[in-house]
Length: 502
Image 1 (tube, rainbow, N blue to C red):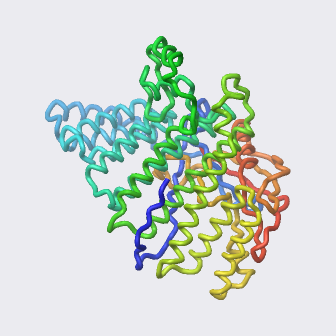
Image 2 (cartoon, one colour):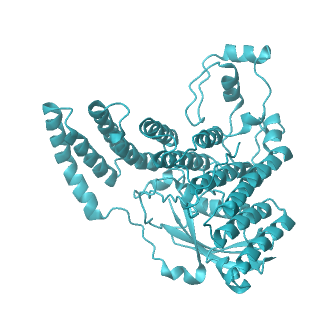
Image 3 (cartoon, helix red, strand yellow):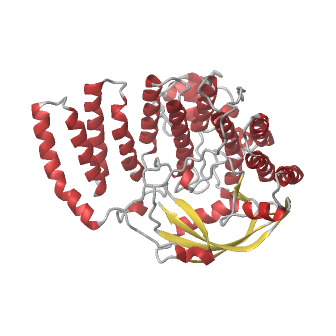
């Protein structure tokens, strides 16, 4: 992937763009019958855990009763409006109100149908490419999340992106938001169907039949997210294999389709850079490219930890490619180039503070350490320290700034499963309801690796599946060790309460 260079906006102050997704929390008693696809953890030092009060809330019982009582009235009013004038804009408002009421009492299938009807009315009134249909499409996503309808959400997110691409200039702030929204969803869906699947050790990957379908055009019916393909003619498929039309697997075949879409999305957005493109945007996209490249290492680590036997996969050409040194090295190189570009761009721009310059160097150092390259990491941390020292900060103050209350997962620019960032519900629920917690003790060595993980306890509703996900996530995550004057030191026997929501 290319990194495009633009002349930095001299008046722009660099800031880190952090788009946080909070999870939509199930309220019904049968929530655990679904995959924990919306699960995320919030770690808090155990000695501070009492500062958070568990809230299994959602809508209050009185709100639910009010919504249930109002639904028949809404339906009656909507029927009357439809009989009088199906193109009345007020009908859109009434349908949206009905949909929200249905969501409140967990009638999510009904809510989805209501929002679809509202969107259709908006299209009839305002036109096929109008953005008036966007709010109800976005609201429907909450119900689809509740039902774990990943493919349906992908279709909606892609439609929302296309609608905005018709209405706004390619380099506008609106298209930057549209790009980041779609990119964040692709990442979230990738984690939901892989790392948070009920099948531990599963990583979304194309099957042989899907691969042949894409290559030679037999069969069809592949969904937008690559999760399903219907081979309609087995004879054509076998003939393609027999006559050599189905080529051998290559590196593009082992990459999840959403990640390939992400690469295309970033490249297309880079090509749109224009007069409205700021330094912040260029830096954010470059960091996103590094994040994308890191997924290869995450897959390899997760697959090794999962150790799931599959006779059709183990010892195959696909497995060899997915776990090859070449793929890991390319992942490291692409990300490093992107982060070096960020560092050089920031240092060459006017009006950027020393803190942001140092942060870019710390990102590079974290990247090196995440791949086990200790000496380059140490050199990067020391370089970041030196920039801050030159600004008058002493080592003790720098150490404190780099030692937050919760351990820092590295590389910092990456995305990780079971976090606010990847739970994927548009941030429409800003204050999540924590349904339980698990108390954990573990150690972090000077290289960022975890060890001695021990479960100390959990809330009364502790869930073994959630515990397995948390243990696997901690074991597979690299953390920034203690930094003392730029030197790496271990964090021994730290205790955290991981609150969870889903």
